[in-house]
Length: 169
Ligand SMILES: [Zn+2]
Image (tube, rainbow, N blue to C red; front, side, top):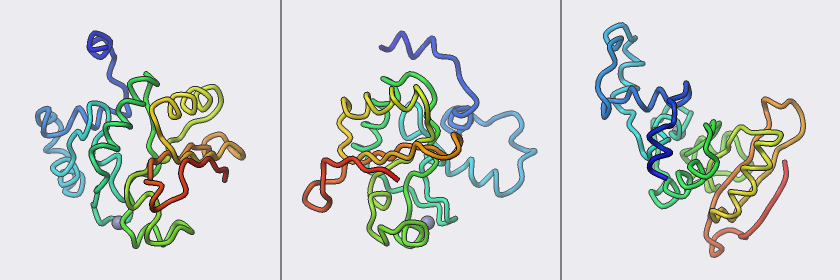
């Protein structure tokens, strides 16, 4: 598996992670606007393939509190999938979740969940692997415009949420 990582070509989506302070300051850093510079300073890789910025709350609060075991499971899935996974929604602070989801201020995204933009054959492959890796909450949006299709994954404990479950949007 390690050899495969070495040969993997960087892609646009993950250049952001490669440009994080952990991997050295990019040459164009001084040309960045203040907000972008701040974003780089608080960004770092949380797994080999995912950066904090990809997974943080989108309301502007800058919180990213997904527990490491979930991130490790997501990385396992990424390695099995073996191509970029575009996260359209990762961690949400309770207030933001209440704004955008009918799950209110305590939905899976306030703990550990991701929505991944995927459709077609890739959606079939991702689903198959997600079950194997052990995600127990699987939400499927595969109708409407292809660009808006996604798969939600979480592993909420059955003590707080009905799991395992599959649902559609
Ligand atoms: Zn927030």
